[in-house]
Picture (cartoon, rainbow, N blue to C red):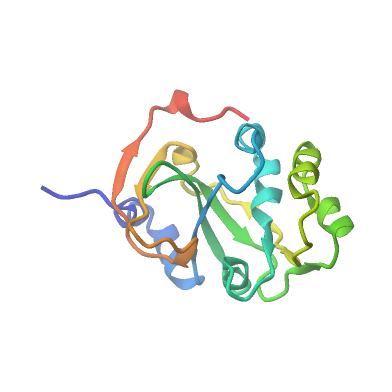
Length: 181
């Protein structure tokens, strides 16, 4: 029995598969559990909110944000139960090598989607400021039929970001489960 992998899906679109291999594609699994309650519902409302939210990363060299600096394409996932991850889309990084440095909280909140700002201000209250970068991500139409529907096994590797590699597909959810925003 053949196990369906993300690589099989990409190979179905040869142009995307070649681009994924050529453009320093990274796979990023964003955890939601460290974010304020209510964030997941809000980011599902609008692709633009999701783009902005995904584009703000800690500037810590040990953090995955530093790995995005030289990434041309990003296959974005949200962390799901256990080791699974839900695919949310393919994003082109228009900030390759040159993300905007967010030097203070005012700059950070200015780049935060308005609908998320109050949640994060309350969530971050009293916490020490950590420098961040802002990456200009642009949603690509590749694989958009699978946005919010494709669930893969991320494996035991807890890295939030990794170079592109095949992953086992656990599920392709029905179209009516994807957000309509």
